[in-house]
Image 1 (tube, one colour):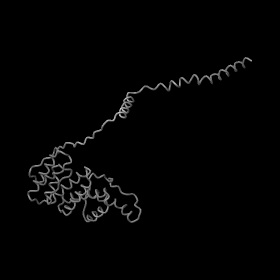
Image 2 (cartoon, one colour; image 1 turned 135 degrees about the horizontal axis):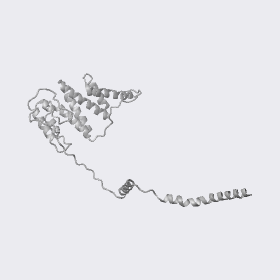
Image 3 (spheres, helix red, strand yellow; image 1 turned 180 degrees about the vertical axis):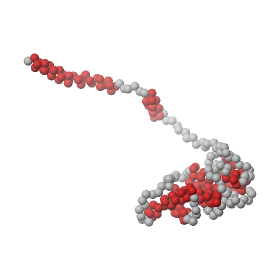
Image 4 (cartoon, helix red, strand yellow; image 1 turned 180 degrees about the horizontal axis):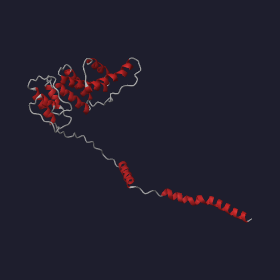
Length: 260
């Protein structure tokens, strides 16, 4: 009888606790939900910054000021330099190479003057000294080298149509050069011209250029560029012939957005 009473007591206590536990636990859960964890300094700053950004309309002013231009520290050129001094002056991204070693005695002086004006320009995009030299000295033996560098300037500035036209002119002017140094320089121009046509999707012109230069010997980086251009045309020709293009060869550059 005693055991039955003890058992009944424990059973009653268990039932009572089952009903009381939710009532006792509810305020604890409520307090746990209401009491937030202390904010870290980073969280506080981030929240303040976001709120300030959303609430205030800050006027954004784009800085379009062109950077100041400084001539290369190693640029030194006398008023009447010889060919080697012009080639090694280091002002432009590519060395200037004459198409012939025969000089009329004036072209070096005129080019040196143009290079000095270009070095002393105040706006980075100002290439007037170089374009004026090309316009006034169309038959100069330095014309092709200046055009080649102009094309690179246009390309890096985003003026792809100008770069294309400039390299095309340089190729037409220099493709018949016979001096060893001139041939190497013109080959670089041709490689740039081919890549630019490929970037702009000018497949017909690219095929014409490759046929035009079929008997030409390319070395070094220009030779590698020509191989890449020929490989890139394989899937294009396959599509034109109704075949399977397979995996297209990447030239390492996409179709650019032209500024001009």
